[in-house]
Length: 167
Image (cartoon, rainbow, N blue to C red; front, side, top):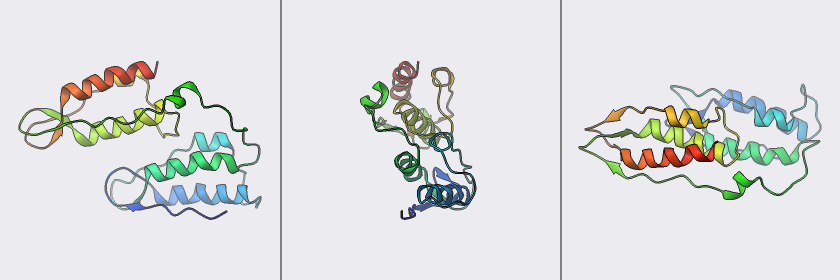
């Protein structure tokens, strides 16, 4: 099994490189039946959580999460492939919000962070902090006026719909 190569990002959402590398080393060793500590289980992959560096490089969250999902198939005792769960079968895609400027909008970084977590949770993908319907209903984003933000009514409409997916 080849060790994956993840893109290194310096800004945006990213995972701590050292933490990801440590888990990937254990996954590779488990898949190749080499002992470097306790074997990794599918449950370990689904519960994996990594720090997010405030400054400095990190690995692309999407690439790491996709790798962990794929790695479940390689592990000993992995469940056989089955029909996707109803929520996963829907395959919801992330919305595209209209950017606004010179009128009040929601902070883009905060909205994107929550939308990424909502989509991963709703589509059954691994996520460090799954989102609950209550969290979606209670979220309050910072509003911006002179810098670019997202159209508030579009974001609010998406959140109303997303809360129904997570019930």
